[in-house]
Image (cartoon, rainbow, N blue to C red; front, side, top):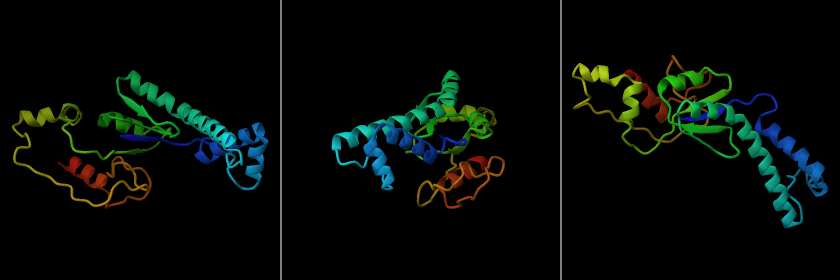
Length: 190
């Protein structure tokens, strides 16, 4: 799953960018001149200075994003889940069971959760426990002879919500053509 954190006041990328720009303008007069021209602070004539300003700007943005994701990723790691974070982004990816996904969905700090579409690979060792498959298998139903295909065009829509099912859907529009919606609906209904 890809988990994007919600931005509190002062934490949006625009707000963090403006704060970083202010730091650069205070530290480097050339950056202030660039900002006064309605440009970026790293748009200066000296290439070495431009690189230094850009590096410091990126470091400020990256530090802010790390601070946002750290509490939740640290908690998930303590619970035994592998988590991958991305510098400069208020998000992380992890393989999580359904119960944890639903738990995260109820947290105010979480903005969006998306199923990451990946190449097919067997994952029944974790999925079977999550969906209580053993109870069904014990009754003789093992999926033999059953096939399901999800035929969709396109990929992840940036305006979708994560799993488009009534019991867990967040407010917002539902992109009905999205493969995640179809796959999640099929998985829940089967």
